[in-house]
Amino acid sequence: MDSVVLLHLLQSIAPRFQWRLSAIHVHHGISPNADAWAEFCAKLCTLHNIPLQVERVDITSLRDEHGVEAAARKLRHKAFLNQVCDFVALAHHADDQAETLMLQLLRGAGVKGVSAMPVLKLANPLMHATVRPLLDVSREQLRDYATQNGLTWIEDESNADVRYPRNFLRHQILPELAERFPQYRETLARSARHFAEATQLMDDLAQLDAASAFDGETLDVGALGALSSSRAKNLLRYFLHVRGAAMPQSVQIDDMLRQLCEAREDAVVCVAFGEWEVRRYQDRIYVMPILGDFDRTVVLAWSGEAELVWSALNAKLIFSEGGSTGISVEKLKGECLSLRLRSGGESLRLHHKGKNRSLKNILQEKHIPPWQRERLPLLYRGNELVAIIGVAIHAEYQAREGEKSLLVSWEK
Image (cartoon, rainbow, N blue to C red; front, side, top):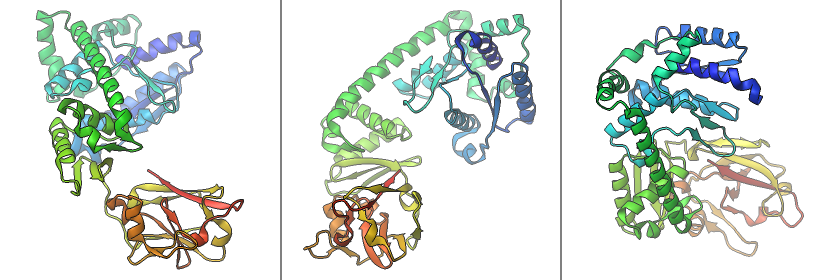
Protein backbone atom coordinates (compact mmCIF):
# COMPACT_ATOMS: atom_id res chain seq x y z
CA MET A 1 0.00 0.00 0.00
CA ASP A 2 2.73 2.48 0.94
CA SER A 3 4.66 1.81 -2.31
CA VAL A 4 1.47 2.27 -4.37
CA VAL A 5 0.85 5.60 -2.65
CA LEU A 6 4.44 6.74 -3.24
CA LEU A 7 4.20 5.87 -6.93
CA HIS A 8 0.90 7.75 -7.23
CA LEU A 9 2.33 10.84 -5.51
CA LEU A 10 5.51 10.91 -7.57
CA GLN A 11 3.84 10.38 -10.94
CA SER A 12 1.36 13.16 -10.15
CA ILE A 13 4.08 15.76 -9.54
CA ALA A 14 6.82 14.47 -11.85
CA PRO A 15 5.76 16.64 -14.84
CA ARG A 16 6.02 19.78 -12.73
CA PHE A 17 9.71 19.08 -11.96
CA GLN A 18 10.52 17.29 -15.23
CA TRP A 19 11.44 14.11 -13.37
CA ARG A 20 11.86 10.88 -15.30
CA LEU A 21 10.39 8.07 -13.21
CA SER A 22 11.03 4.36 -13.39
CA ALA A 23 10.17 1.60 -10.94
CA ILE A 24 11.79 -1.58 -9.70
CA HIS A 25 10.09 -4.56 -8.09
CA VAL A 26 12.31 -7.10 -6.36
CA HIS A 27 10.89 -10.59 -6.83
CA HIS A 28 12.16 -12.61 -3.84
CA GLY A 29 10.28 -15.77 -4.77
CA ILE A 30 9.47 -16.43 -1.10
CA SER A 31 5.68 -16.24 -1.29
CA PRO A 32 3.62 -18.53 -3.52
CA ASN A 33 1.96 -15.30 -4.66
CA ALA A 34 5.24 -13.66 -5.76
CA ASP A 35 4.49 -14.00 -9.48
CA ALA A 36 1.07 -12.42 -8.99
CA TRP A 37 2.69 -9.47 -7.19
CA ALA A 38 5.09 -8.90 -10.09
CA GLU A 39 2.16 -9.03 -12.51
CA PHE A 40 0.25 -6.48 -10.39
CA CYS A 41 3.28 -4.14 -10.47
CA ALA A 42 3.57 -4.52 -14.24
CA LYS A 43 -0.11 -3.60 -14.76
CA LEU A 44 0.12 -0.65 -12.37
CA CYS A 45 3.21 0.78 -14.07
CA THR A 46 1.70 0.24 -17.53
CA LEU A 47 -1.37 2.20 -16.38
CA HIS A 48 0.84 5.17 -15.47
CA ASN A 49 3.26 4.68 -18.40
CA ILE A 50 6.20 4.14 -16.03
CA PRO A 51 9.02 1.75 -17.06
CA LEU A 52 9.30 -1.20 -14.66
CA GLN A 53 12.21 -3.53 -13.96
CA VAL A 54 11.44 -6.81 -12.17
CA GLU A 55 14.60 -7.99 -10.42
CA ARG A 56 14.50 -11.68 -9.48
CA VAL A 57 16.69 -12.70 -6.53
CA ASP A 58 17.31 -15.97 -4.72
CA ILE A 59 17.74 -15.84 -0.94
CA THR A 60 18.69 -19.54 -0.62
CA SER A 61 22.43 -19.00 -0.10
CA LEU A 62 21.86 -16.30 2.56
CA ARG A 63 18.82 -17.73 4.32
CA ASP A 64 20.56 -19.91 6.91
CA GLU A 65 23.08 -17.25 7.91
CA HIS A 66 20.85 -14.17 7.94
CA GLY A 67 17.26 -15.43 8.20
CA VAL A 68 14.48 -14.81 5.69
CA GLU A 69 13.86 -11.11 6.42
CA ALA A 70 17.50 -10.05 6.57
CA ALA A 71 18.45 -12.10 3.49
CA ALA A 72 15.60 -10.57 1.48
CA ARG A 73 16.53 -7.07 2.67
CA LYS A 74 20.20 -7.59 1.80
CA LEU A 75 19.42 -8.66 -1.76
CA ARG A 76 16.79 -5.95 -2.15
CA HIS A 77 19.27 -3.22 -1.17
CA LYS A 78 21.85 -4.71 -3.55
CA ALA A 79 19.30 -4.47 -6.36
CA PHE A 80 18.64 -0.82 -5.46
CA LEU A 81 22.36 -0.02 -5.47
CA ASN A 82 22.69 -1.31 -9.03
CA GLN A 83 20.19 1.20 -10.40
CA VAL A 84 21.43 3.97 -12.69
CA CYS A 85 19.58 7.05 -11.48
CA ASP A 86 19.88 10.17 -9.32
CA PHE A 87 17.59 9.04 -6.50
CA VAL A 88 15.96 5.84 -5.30
CA ALA A 89 12.74 6.76 -3.49
CA LEU A 90 11.52 4.34 -0.83
CA ALA A 91 8.09 4.33 0.81
CA HIS A 92 9.10 3.92 4.47
CA HIS A 93 6.75 5.88 6.74
CA ALA A 94 6.46 6.98 10.38
CA ASP A 95 5.29 3.58 11.62
CA ASP A 96 8.22 1.88 9.85
CA GLN A 97 10.58 4.32 11.54
CA ALA A 98 9.14 3.61 15.00
CA GLU A 99 9.29 -0.15 14.42
CA THR A 100 12.89 0.07 13.21
CA LEU A 101 13.99 2.09 16.23
CA MET A 102 12.30 -0.34 18.63
CA LEU A 103 13.85 -3.36 16.91
CA GLN A 104 17.31 -1.79 17.00
CA LEU A 105 16.97 -1.01 20.71
CA LEU A 106 15.88 -4.58 21.42
CA ARG A 107 18.91 -5.86 19.50
CA GLY A 108 21.22 -3.72 21.61
CA ALA A 109 22.34 -1.66 18.64
CA GLY A 110 24.82 1.19 18.98
CA VAL A 111 24.12 4.88 18.45
CA LYS A 112 24.38 4.59 14.66
CA GLY A 113 21.94 1.69 14.63
CA VAL A 114 19.27 3.44 16.68
CA SER A 115 19.50 6.61 14.57
CA ALA A 116 17.16 4.58 12.33
CA MET A 117 16.41 5.69 8.76
CA PRO A 118 17.32 9.15 7.37
CA VAL A 119 15.02 11.08 5.04
CA LEU A 120 17.94 11.58 2.68
CA LYS A 121 21.05 9.40 2.47
CA LEU A 122 23.80 10.64 0.21
CA ALA A 123 26.14 8.03 -1.23
CA ASN A 124 29.49 8.72 -2.88
CA PRO A 125 29.45 10.99 -5.97
CA LEU A 126 29.38 8.00 -8.32
CA MET A 127 26.17 6.57 -6.85
CA HIS A 128 22.60 7.69 -6.38
CA ALA A 129 21.09 9.02 -3.18
CA THR A 130 18.26 7.37 -1.26
CA VAL A 131 15.24 9.45 -0.28
CA ARG A 132 12.34 8.54 2.00
CA PRO A 133 9.78 11.33 1.55
CA LEU A 134 7.04 9.69 3.66
CA LEU A 135 8.92 9.26 6.96
CA ASP A 136 6.75 11.84 8.72
CA VAL A 137 3.49 10.29 7.47
CA SER A 138 1.70 7.54 9.42
CA ARG A 139 0.45 4.29 7.95
CA GLU A 140 -3.11 5.39 8.74
CA GLN A 141 -2.68 8.64 6.76
CA LEU A 142 -1.31 6.72 3.79
CA ARG A 143 -4.25 4.31 3.90
CA ASP A 144 -6.70 7.25 3.98
CA TYR A 145 -4.96 8.77 0.93
CA ALA A 146 -5.09 5.45 -0.93
CA THR A 147 -8.79 5.03 -0.18
CA GLN A 148 -9.70 8.61 -1.14
CA ASN A 149 -7.88 8.27 -4.47
CA GLY A 150 -9.34 4.86 -5.30
CA LEU A 151 -5.97 3.12 -5.29
CA THR A 152 -5.69 -0.66 -5.19
CA TRP A 153 -2.84 -2.62 -3.66
CA ILE A 154 -1.79 -6.07 -2.53
CA GLU A 155 -1.18 -7.11 1.07
CA ASP A 156 1.77 -9.43 1.67
CA GLU A 157 0.29 -12.28 3.71
CA SER A 158 3.49 -12.57 5.72
CA ASN A 159 2.80 -9.14 7.26
CA ALA A 160 0.26 -10.83 9.53
CA ASP A 161 2.73 -13.46 10.77
CA VAL A 162 3.71 -12.40 14.32
CA ARG A 163 6.60 -14.88 14.35
CA TYR A 164 8.55 -12.14 12.61
CA PRO A 165 9.80 -9.58 15.18
CA ARG A 166 8.62 -6.56 13.22
CA ASN A 167 5.12 -7.96 12.84
CA PHE A 168 5.02 -8.85 16.56
CA LEU A 169 5.77 -5.22 17.42
CA ARG A 170 3.35 -3.92 14.79
CA HIS A 171 0.35 -6.03 15.79
CA GLN A 172 0.79 -6.72 19.51
CA ILE A 173 3.07 -4.14 21.14
CA LEU A 174 2.70 -0.81 19.36
CA PRO A 175 -1.14 -0.75 19.47
CA GLU A 176 -0.89 -1.09 23.26
CA LEU A 177 1.74 1.63 23.32
CA ALA A 178 -0.48 3.92 21.25
CA GLU A 179 -3.26 3.76 23.84
CA ARG A 180 -0.99 5.08 26.59
CA PHE A 181 1.31 7.24 24.41
CA PRO A 182 -0.67 8.42 21.35
CA GLN A 183 2.27 10.51 20.09
CA TYR A 184 4.81 7.68 20.33
CA ARG A 185 5.65 7.85 16.60
CA GLU A 186 6.66 11.51 16.80
CA THR A 187 8.51 10.91 20.09
CA LEU A 188 10.52 7.97 18.75
CA ALA A 189 11.26 9.87 15.53
CA ARG A 190 12.63 12.73 17.63
CA SER A 191 14.83 10.28 19.54
CA ALA A 192 16.08 8.87 16.23
CA ARG A 193 17.07 12.38 15.15
CA HIS A 194 18.97 12.88 18.43
CA PHE A 195 20.81 9.61 17.86
CA ALA A 196 21.60 10.69 14.29
CA GLU A 197 23.14 13.92 15.60
CA ALA A 198 25.21 11.95 18.11
CA THR A 199 26.34 9.66 15.29
CA GLN A 200 27.49 12.66 13.28
CA LEU A 201 29.50 13.95 16.24
CA MET A 202 31.14 10.52 16.65
CA ASP A 203 32.00 10.48 12.95
CA ASP A 204 33.44 13.99 13.19
CA LEU A 205 35.62 12.90 16.13
CA ALA A 206 36.71 9.77 14.26
CA GLN A 207 37.74 11.90 11.25
CA LEU A 208 39.88 14.09 13.52
CA ASP A 209 41.56 11.02 15.01
CA ALA A 210 41.94 9.44 11.57
CA ALA A 211 43.92 12.42 10.26
CA SER A 212 47.01 11.27 12.17
CA ALA A 213 46.18 7.55 12.48
CA PHE A 214 45.34 6.57 8.87
CA ASP A 215 48.09 5.85 6.37
CA GLY A 216 46.54 4.97 3.05
CA GLU A 217 44.58 1.77 3.61
CA THR A 218 45.99 1.06 7.08
CA LEU A 219 45.54 2.24 10.67
CA ASP A 220 48.43 2.96 13.05
CA VAL A 221 48.46 0.71 16.13
CA GLY A 222 50.23 3.29 18.29
CA ALA A 223 47.72 6.03 17.51
CA LEU A 224 44.83 3.67 18.22
CA GLY A 225 46.31 2.47 21.52
CA ALA A 226 46.94 6.05 22.71
CA LEU A 227 43.21 6.82 22.74
CA SER A 228 40.72 6.13 25.50
CA SER A 229 38.82 2.86 25.13
CA SER A 230 35.62 4.52 23.88
CA ARG A 231 37.45 6.77 21.47
CA ALA A 232 39.61 3.89 20.19
CA LYS A 233 36.53 1.75 19.51
CA ASN A 234 34.94 4.70 17.70
CA LEU A 235 38.02 5.10 15.49
CA LEU A 236 38.24 1.35 14.83
CA ARG A 237 34.58 1.22 13.78
CA TYR A 238 35.15 4.23 11.52
CA PHE A 239 38.20 2.54 9.96
CA LEU A 240 36.19 -0.61 9.22
CA HIS A 241 33.36 1.48 7.79
CA VAL A 242 35.48 3.52 5.38
CA ARG A 243 37.21 0.34 4.19
CA GLY A 244 33.78 -1.11 3.32
CA ALA A 245 33.89 -3.90 5.92
CA ALA A 246 30.87 -5.35 7.71
CA MET A 247 30.38 -3.98 11.21
CA PRO A 248 31.25 -6.45 14.01
CA GLN A 249 29.25 -6.94 17.19
CA SER A 250 30.30 -4.96 20.29
CA VAL A 251 31.96 -7.98 21.89
CA GLN A 252 33.94 -8.54 18.67
CA ILE A 253 35.11 -4.92 18.63
CA ASP A 254 36.29 -5.25 22.25
CA ASP A 255 38.22 -8.44 21.48
CA MET A 256 39.61 -6.99 18.27
CA LEU A 257 40.86 -3.85 20.02
CA ARG A 258 42.49 -5.89 22.79
CA GLN A 259 44.32 -8.21 20.40
CA LEU A 260 45.47 -5.43 18.09
CA CYS A 261 46.80 -3.15 20.83
CA GLU A 262 48.08 -5.60 23.44
CA ALA A 263 49.80 -8.27 21.33
CA ARG A 264 53.60 -8.48 21.23
CA GLU A 265 55.22 -6.38 18.53
CA ASP A 266 56.22 -9.46 16.53
CA ALA A 267 52.97 -11.34 17.10
CA VAL A 268 50.84 -12.47 14.15
CA VAL A 269 47.37 -11.03 14.79
CA CYS A 270 44.38 -12.02 12.67
CA VAL A 271 40.81 -11.56 13.90
CA ALA A 272 38.00 -12.85 11.68
CA PHE A 273 34.44 -11.51 11.77
CA GLY A 274 31.90 -12.77 9.27
CA GLU A 275 33.46 -12.67 5.82
CA TRP A 276 36.11 -10.15 6.88
CA GLU A 277 39.29 -10.10 8.93
CA VAL A 278 41.63 -7.56 10.51
CA ARG A 279 45.37 -8.18 10.60
CA ARG A 280 48.31 -6.46 12.25
CA TYR A 281 51.79 -6.18 10.73
CA GLN A 282 54.64 -3.84 11.74
CA ASP A 283 52.38 -1.59 13.81
CA ARG A 284 49.85 -1.21 11.00
CA ILE A 285 46.29 -2.58 10.96
CA TYR A 286 44.77 -3.95 7.77
CA VAL A 287 41.19 -5.00 7.05
CA MET A 288 40.16 -7.18 4.10
CA PRO A 289 37.74 -9.86 2.96
CA ILE A 290 38.89 -13.25 4.23
CA LEU A 291 41.46 -14.67 1.84
CA GLY A 292 40.28 -18.10 0.79
CA ASP A 293 42.23 -21.04 -0.55
CA PHE A 294 44.07 -20.59 -3.84
CA ASP A 295 45.73 -22.78 -6.44
CA ARG A 296 49.49 -22.53 -5.93
CA THR A 297 50.16 -24.07 -9.33
CA VAL A 298 48.14 -21.49 -11.29
CA VAL A 299 49.71 -20.07 -14.46
CA LEU A 300 47.85 -17.35 -16.37
CA ALA A 301 48.97 -16.54 -19.88
CA TRP A 302 48.86 -12.84 -20.73
CA SER A 303 48.13 -11.96 -24.34
CA GLY A 304 47.52 -8.23 -24.12
CA GLU A 305 44.30 -8.16 -22.04
CA ALA A 306 43.61 -4.92 -20.16
CA GLU A 307 42.47 -6.86 -17.07
CA LEU A 308 42.93 -10.30 -15.52
CA VAL A 309 41.30 -11.68 -12.37
CA TRP A 310 43.87 -12.83 -9.79
CA SER A 311 41.91 -15.02 -7.37
CA ALA A 312 44.76 -15.56 -4.88
CA LEU A 313 44.37 -11.93 -3.73
CA ASN A 314 40.67 -11.50 -4.54
CA ALA A 315 41.96 -8.81 -6.88
CA LYS A 316 42.11 -7.71 -10.48
CA LEU A 317 45.31 -7.07 -12.44
CA ILE A 318 45.31 -3.91 -14.55
CA PHE A 319 47.60 -3.60 -17.59
CA SER A 320 48.20 -0.14 -19.04
CA GLU A 321 50.73 1.82 -21.08
CA GLY A 322 53.13 3.89 -19.01
CA GLY A 323 56.06 6.26 -19.28
CA SER A 324 59.60 5.34 -18.32
CA THR A 325 58.79 3.80 -14.95
CA GLY A 326 57.33 0.51 -16.12
CA ILE A 327 58.43 -2.65 -17.91
CA SER A 328 60.09 -2.29 -21.30
CA VAL A 329 57.60 -3.41 -23.95
CA GLU A 330 60.43 -4.01 -26.45
CA LYS A 331 62.23 -6.44 -24.14
CA LEU A 332 59.03 -8.42 -23.52
CA LYS A 333 58.78 -9.43 -27.19
CA GLY A 334 59.65 -12.85 -28.53
CA GLU A 335 58.47 -15.05 -25.66
CA CYS A 336 55.18 -16.06 -24.04
CA LEU A 337 54.24 -13.91 -21.05
CA SER A 338 52.63 -15.49 -18.00
CA LEU A 339 51.72 -14.81 -14.40
CA ARG A 340 52.60 -17.28 -11.66
CA LEU A 341 52.95 -17.59 -7.90
CA ARG A 342 56.12 -18.12 -5.90
CA SER A 343 57.39 -21.68 -5.77
CA GLY A 344 60.62 -21.02 -3.87
CA GLY A 345 64.17 -20.01 -4.75
CA GLU A 346 63.28 -17.08 -7.02
CA SER A 347 65.64 -14.11 -7.24
CA LEU A 348 65.66 -10.70 -8.89
CA ARG A 349 68.28 -8.07 -9.71
CA LEU A 350 66.92 -4.60 -8.93
CA HIS A 351 69.86 -2.54 -10.24
CA HIS A 352 72.02 -2.97 -13.34
CA LYS A 353 75.25 -3.17 -11.31
CA GLY A 354 73.68 -5.01 -8.40
CA LYS A 355 73.49 -8.68 -7.50
CA ASN A 356 70.56 -11.04 -7.63
CA ARG A 357 68.56 -10.98 -4.43
CA SER A 358 66.06 -13.48 -3.13
CA LEU A 359 62.36 -12.61 -3.33
CA LYS A 360 62.08 -13.26 0.40
CA ASN A 361 64.64 -10.54 1.09
CA ILE A 362 63.07 -8.08 -1.35
CA LEU A 363 59.55 -8.57 0.01
CA GLN A 364 60.71 -8.12 3.60
CA GLU A 365 62.64 -4.97 2.67
CA LYS A 366 59.57 -3.56 0.87
CA HIS A 367 57.45 -4.28 4.00
CA ILE A 368 55.02 -6.51 2.10
CA PRO A 369 52.68 -8.13 4.67
CA PRO A 370 53.35 -11.87 5.14
CA TRP A 371 49.87 -12.96 4.01
CA GLN A 372 50.42 -11.26 0.64
CA ARG A 373 53.89 -12.64 -0.12
CA GLU A 374 52.78 -16.08 -1.27
CA ARG A 375 49.88 -14.60 -3.23
CA LEU A 376 51.60 -11.85 -5.24
CA PRO A 377 51.62 -12.39 -9.02
CA LEU A 378 55.01 -12.81 -10.67
CA LEU A 379 55.36 -11.86 -14.35
CA TYR A 380 57.50 -14.20 -16.47
CA ARG A 381 58.86 -13.91 -20.02
CA GLY A 382 59.23 -17.53 -20.93
CA ASN A 383 60.95 -18.93 -17.84
CA GLU A 384 62.65 -15.69 -16.88
CA LEU A 385 61.26 -13.67 -13.96
CA VAL A 386 60.49 -10.11 -15.09
CA ALA A 387 58.72 -8.51 -12.14
CA ILE A 388 56.97 -8.89 -8.83
CA ILE A 389 53.75 -7.07 -9.65
CA GLY A 390 53.39 -3.86 -7.69
CA VAL A 391 56.75 -4.36 -5.95
CA ALA A 392 59.82 -4.57 -8.19
CA ILE A 393 61.01 -4.98 -11.80
CA HIS A 394 64.13 -6.89 -12.89
CA ALA A 395 66.87 -4.41 -13.87
CA GLU A 396 67.14 -5.84 -17.40
CA TYR A 397 63.44 -5.17 -18.06
CA GLN A 398 63.14 -1.68 -16.62
CA ALA A 399 62.05 0.81 -19.29
CA ARG A 400 64.44 3.62 -20.12
CA GLU A 401 63.67 7.29 -20.69
CA GLY A 402 61.36 7.73 -23.69
CA GLU A 403 60.82 4.00 -24.11
CA LYS A 404 57.31 2.52 -24.39
CA SER A 405 56.51 0.67 -21.20
CA LEU A 406 53.93 -1.57 -19.58
CA LEU A 407 52.47 -0.78 -16.18
CA VAL A 408 50.90 -3.64 -14.22
CA SER A 409 49.01 -2.96 -10.99
CA TRP A 410 46.33 -4.74 -8.99
CA GLU A 411 43.18 -3.44 -7.42
CA LYS A 412 40.72 -5.00 -4.98
